[in-house]
Amino acid sequence: MNAALRKALAASRLTEIDVAAHLGVDPKTVRRWLSGQRPYPRHRWALADLLQAEEDALWPPRSQEDEAHAPASKHVQRVYAHRWQVPREVWWDLFSSAEQEIGILVYSGLFLADDPGILQLLEARAREGVSVRILLGDPESEPVKQRGREEQIGEALAARANNALLLFGTLLHVDGVEIRTHSTILYNSVYLTEKKLLVNQHIYGLPAAKSPVMEINRELSPDMANTYARSFDGVWDKSKNTAT
Image 1 (cartoon, rainbow, N blue to C red):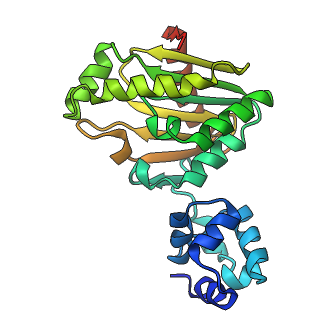
Image 2 (image 1 turned 120 degrees about the vertical axis):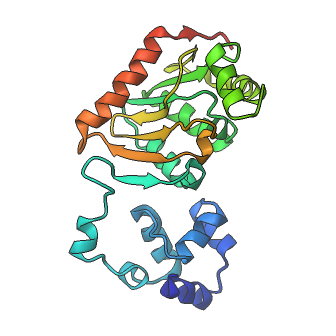
């Protein structure tokens, strides 16, 4: 629990909802900060300004030992036990920081396609010259149907893939956005930029939302990152264009 942050909010007579609205984040994110999660730097600065407090008073600097052990390993910067635990701002920062490319390789990715803010962000990045490539599972393909059977949801996964095609398809009018369908067996869902990747493991019988996610910095772990990037390109080369 971050007692200093709670005290500062009380002194400023601000609620979680007030802070969320001011910073443009979800109230659940503010609750995580109050529970002890350390915000990204830009959020720490904005919150310190809002509360008229010193950043170090709200979040004391980490010791050198803590900083040294911050990454999960020398290859993986962070690991989330489940995709649903990845904060929305992590997805937002991944895509908003891209300057060259954004790649999304999934069966449906409906959690992103169903987020109007993320769709607007992808459109904005494309209009600024970022290449946006989206690979979705072909709803009629056997791998998508098989994955649905393995997750014991029947045709639901194919339906989700169809919905994602329609929602992501609203971006097709934007130069720089390409959407293709694939019929490969996915061992991971991959979300990449030229700076980092989020890799969502696929586990037999479990939906991707309940499976782990790794964050990989492409500069610090180029070999590992390139392994997944090559896999993305391999699927892309075998995919087909969609006229959705």
